[in-house]
Length: 600
Image (cartoon, rainbow, N blue to C red; front, side, top):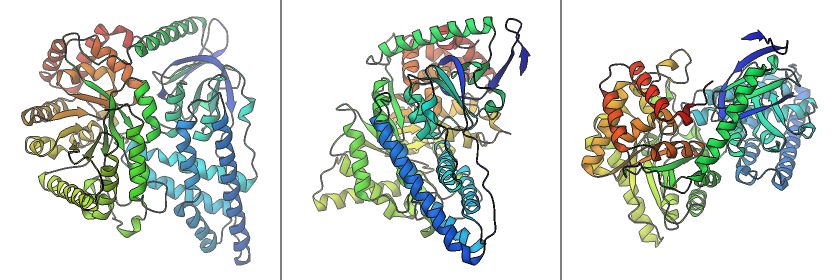
């Protein structure tokens, strides 16, 4: 959308993307050239294979040394206080530079196809990126960008292409780039960068995660921002709604300056409630917890007001490596998590939820599947390959001696799976007892309710576990038979669909009858629009990304459980998701204008 601005006579346009980090920023554009390199493709002779092999390995070494240098400098930087906690991002990229799939397969292409190193690396990178694109989990799917960043760094050394200097960035700019690697993002000084805008990326990319930790507004996935924005353009970046106003007029600028003021004031007010309970005015209390992928994220979760970690996704331990994580590695990782939380705070560890084709050494048990999301994954893989499961369980149990841990099993579809998994857990406990290893013998064991069959028989499952945690992302996807990553049907992803509300009600009723706790750990928990509906269901806990916690807490503390129940009952009478969504949006805007005032 491009229009002439009557006040300034300059061209103004709106660029849309994904709001990756909330906030409003106003400033001048600094165009950082991170365009995709186009490697030259050449056929080589057999005599040149050794030379190209040496060139490639030398480029990998140089890229690794460069990244290690950036890591060291960034960690020493006084202006980047979150560098330490995001140290793992550098480590991920350094591990990728040793990865068998990236390095060995590229060398094999050079040898077998008789092509130059640049071409071989590019072909292999495309293969690996496509591999990650097929993953159902959005966080894991975003790891394709990490592969691309590492390959690009190696490629720049192969082609002797120089990086633009981030040191050129002056105070108060908005960085606009085709893409930014996490290493680039960590080098951005929050004192010099108001926001950033990139063509690529999603909400769960490492770059977006770093932006939220730095609390820098960011819009990603714009596709064409670098084509529509020129260096020096005045920009308004709305990280709440995911849009950029290029060369705004006086009225637009004034409106967004007021919106920024209101947002900053609202955020400052929210953080004052960080240590207060999430309790309604009529005494109903719900625990607010954080979702994390790495131990380093616990600090952010607690600083935003969470009472515990409601979901620790352990898949990160299995990715970008040539071997499976050892028992000691599991133990030390989980011990680090529990020791970084306040005493008495629990961490719910979800056992790994990956398919056979997604983890290290997968050739040992590779499964060909036309739909891996419905194949051998999660607890199914654990039951088929118990040695992997037991290694993780031993690590969790040993760490439970040092803090409060819970075990959560994903992808449970029926009683037989649950009973088999629980038997393995009990057998593992007996092994540790015989070895004299201390652990929490009463460690709670629960399940994720994310498969429709588990929701339907939740009354049978509840008596056999200590807690339920509802994974709304997959439950909605599987129940409504839609792939939320497919743009052709993503509009059908409707969390307030009557079928979903009825299923949630049924699951929670089953938990109540069995006197076990029940929580939600999907994206639905962190969306303010749904808070009163979920509160009305009577959940014990909502677990979400750290940045959403203050908003949800504010809504809870300004509400009554009675009005939440009334809203739920009214929603349950409605026939379509459109009706429910319209009703809930109207009520929430009326009751909490300060939360939803950000829409202009």
